[in-house]
Length: 75
Image 1 (cartoon, rainbow, N blue to C red):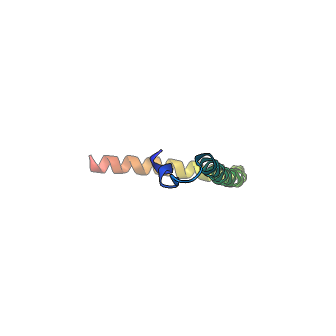
Image 2 (tube, rainbow, N blue to C red; image 1 turned 90 degrees about the vertical axis):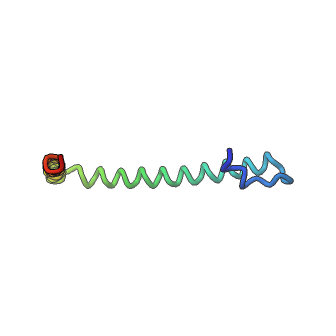
Image 3 (tube, rainbow, N blue to C red; image 1 turned 180 degrees about the vertical axis):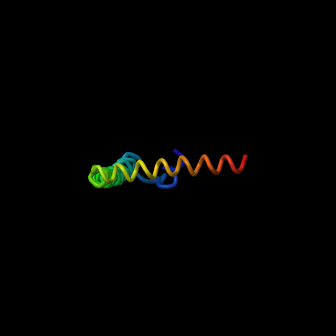
């Protein structure tokens, strides 16, 4: 509520202002979520191959071993 207060004109029509704010914020959310969905779809296509899965497995294993080594050295 504190965020919306700075965009509301006390002398203006409250219903119109809230409608404009609701429509605007909903549009922004729809556009952002659609963008995320497109990026996720593209990422899914990139990581779908057996080669990509193997590389992700190697990278994950490398991070686990690296993290274990850092913990062993620093403790």
